[in-house]
Image (spheres, rainbow, N blue to C red):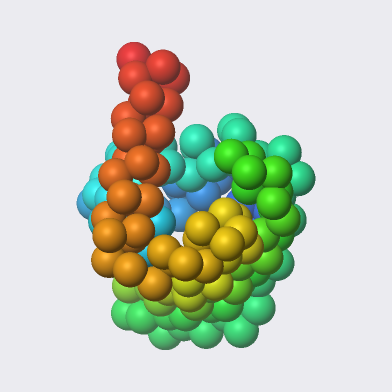
Length: 155
């Protein structure tokens, strides 16, 4: 059952259906990844709405979906053009999940931030992408972008 939930989540992402993605999440969802840090509840759902609404050439592939009653995992790949630089990115992500009440309550995405930064930002990303400073600045910037999206679309 939870394997189907994960598959439904990524199939919805592949079709840019953020409402169906949010339906897979528990109301108390906690999402974490290197780019945004930790987002909770409605803020996590708003991130997916923002990403889906701004996607131009996003391709999502997922595999290795496994789950039991409490925990799950999957691998997925996002291929897209990074809008700020026009550079192509192929980001390979490992996802881990926890479930409660038939929904995803915790979702943690892990990926190589240095590799992502090198693809998205070129030499500057390669140079700085391994640093804590870069990660903090990236999370600050992505969260400001999310705040602006929420203010513009959720009010």
